[in-house]
Length: 324
View 1 (tube, rainbow, N blue to C red):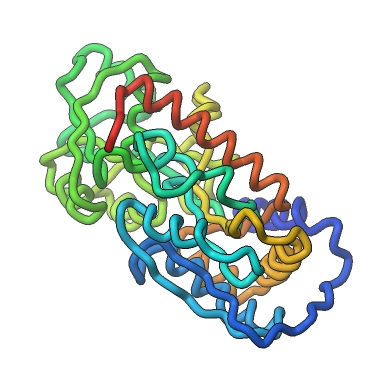
View 2: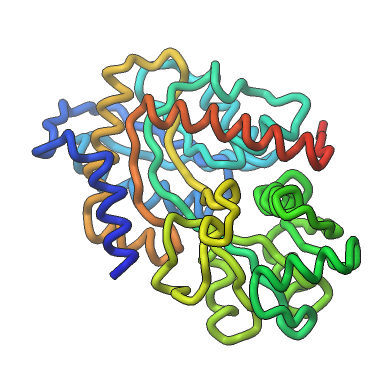
């Protein structure tokens, strides 16, 4: 019930000004959604969940264009270079428009100047988990106490240097005044496997990935980044409950357009997405991946990107993360 209530409130915040579905002029030319990551991942799934409803609502073809590589930079550069004709959009993430600008000295795109924010699509709650056999702590406070008593003796895994998991881990360290050793892997799969195997004790993940192992007791969840407790993890407190509100923000996916895209085109897409994520089939498909439909106005999403970059820059400076 909590999750349904939360989802309803998130949707209502964005859609309250729309009393009836807007009418959309049909466009025969295809709308291209550039996904800056490979097929099959959460970013790709988000885009494909919108593909059919957007085609139907907008009355135009919608094609998915996967342009993976360089942590999402290749795909975002493709969007930045595209004509501002309302026919090209990019699926932006906390990685492409938060982490990358903070950790890379050079990017082939300007995360603010090169884009017009369209809307946030979904949020994805994060979680800190431990292997209970390797680190038998009962709760978040016990973990912090243990780490302070054993500085540098515990390691945490991430999908790689400069990833969201890495930034979440360093944010945790800076917020709690603790010390852990970062162990970067080449991808989320190998990182999670080694946490399950006991080679590494702590992992910062999205709830959807770790949840099956939490349910079976192979991993223990200590805190989630979400506005309130999740109904799938009702006994796990939020970071805010524990006094760490700065750690409580989840990951997210949204849409951006080339900077020159007319405001009328941006609003047309935003309204179509708002309508699409109200559909039960879309919400069910996204929820199956641990993705919670949200929505926002173009102005709100643009401001959110600026805020995320500044936050991640502070984390990168604290952890001395700088990549070429």
